[in-house]
Image (cartoon, rainbow over all chains, first blue to last red):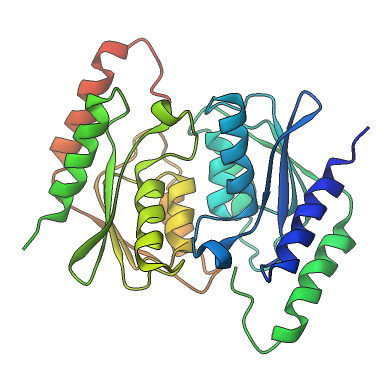
Length: 151
Length: 151
């Protein structure tokens, strides 16, 4: 069985090689990856180009549907509010993330996923590879220690 | 002086003509519209294709920058969590919306815009034309009364 988080990590590593904050995501439905994404904010100079957004965009194109019912998203870092909102809007069933977002303690991802505004709740699971994914981010920022992590 | 909300309303009306939920947005910087967007979810079968996302995407392209510092976004409906998060991520200064989001009382737009996760807060202002924008939405949904408003 495919270890989907490893596929998300591959995407994060590709981002790292390109000088982007190393975050990756894959959308999975019925055992198949239907969308892959990595953070491309700097390359594309686009505030929206987070890994999850790129992956959801591709998954919608692949299925030709804005509804990704029953799909799961594997992501190396806990989603930000934009991405959590996109996951809810796409009716994704479950988020599996490897490492928590330590930039904030406001638990917004959880709050957004549990909101009943669309009559759709998203499950959240803490997955494997926390150390790997946190390590990637730390490595990326090690040369930027005096610079605020701005993602 | 341009009435930017009227420009957002024009976008919402275009969406309505195409059978989309009538929501429009414009991003304004230094007195100029740098991005226009209307809801295109059904046409594009893309969960991300909300008016604000389309407008921010265009504004980033126009400026070739993911940072839209000092920009304002005029939108006919109070942003959903995805769009509020995108507005924060793009470092937009202020949201001006015409009508509140009545699908939920969770005040998530406000919570997201006031979160200090990125050391950037977004101001929120209730603008003009509430009745016009609410009316557009009501008109759109009048034939769908037995169907849940699903946006």
